[in-house]
Image (cartoon, rainbow, N blue to C red; front, side):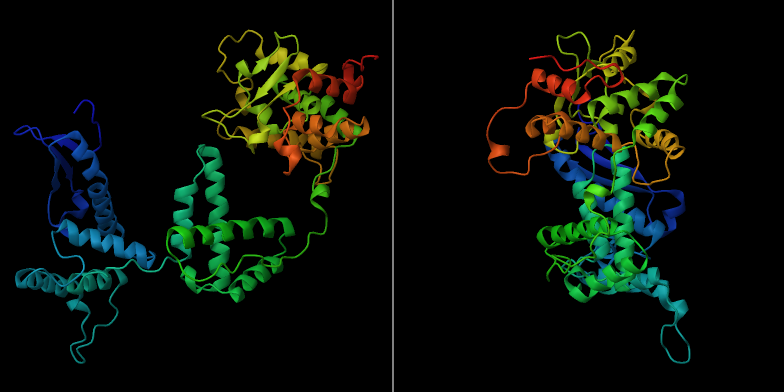
Length: 459
């Protein structure tokens, strides 16, 4: 068992076989009717590994059913829990029983659950709670052999399980975003409807409800894309029938273009933030400087490790790359960005005296919750200088874009510096990447002496 460490799995001392052994919680003894779950998983580690998953899931369903019942579950979830209950008891999950003996005890168990709700005068059962009714029904006749059609809730749960973000912070935000989309869709439709029954009218109801709520066109568009993706996955992976009614659904046009959703910061705001950060903890000033001089995304700078800041190099630079603990927006975001002028000084200060290459360069703003803390800290300084909500920390990317346009930096080099994706075609398919030297020269030209950065070399 040293090499096979799985929860609730033990070795039978009598024969060395692997067994699943788990105590039943005291609060559930009366409901489940036994003190332990015990089952043989096999003679070898391989057999045990194969048998463990299905049996463990069955027990989890059984315990969830005994503890929480079936209230609020979708038909598919109810079926899984009730099926698990019957299987754990060794009963026929799809019928009234394998033999007369089983049919008898199942009938008696069902009667115990619902007899107290029978009207003595009419003989009808009245006011039977959902949990007791579902249990009694399963005991008398089993559960359907076919899994019920997936509903909206089923589809969202499956999508999240299949596409969950790897990093905790990103996964939390993903869960929150999808939960809002699910809630809004069910509210518009009026019920947890089967995916196959969703119609174009349902999609329009959702759209009109979100518009009436005063949501921005960009917000509605993002939520529509989430819902459409969930339905598409349900149709391909859960065999949900019907059409995707959100496909090509007409949405309200944005009042401002995507380009105008965020604006470059005015020079006085940029300078004002520098002044506000001077004399305070240096990490925030260092991050602001790096954002200003590289045009990188805030998350790309705040999540840097010491080993990704290369100052002892003919062309000092930062390495922006995916790691086990971070992801990037697209594959084009992987890049090296030269450090010019004040950016080199800020970067050198950030790594000075730190010998561990995997250590965070900016510990306060690293890891889970770090981006939120950084965003709030910088937004607070920006809002003291401008009330325009289109002015945000991300706006510094627009400032850099404007500088490079003004100095007529070759577009491919500009994309390479900021990590923008090519749209496709020959530009995306042919040729090598811009060199570090090309990117450094472009930044020197774009910055042109800005806050102590070097001037462009004379040709």
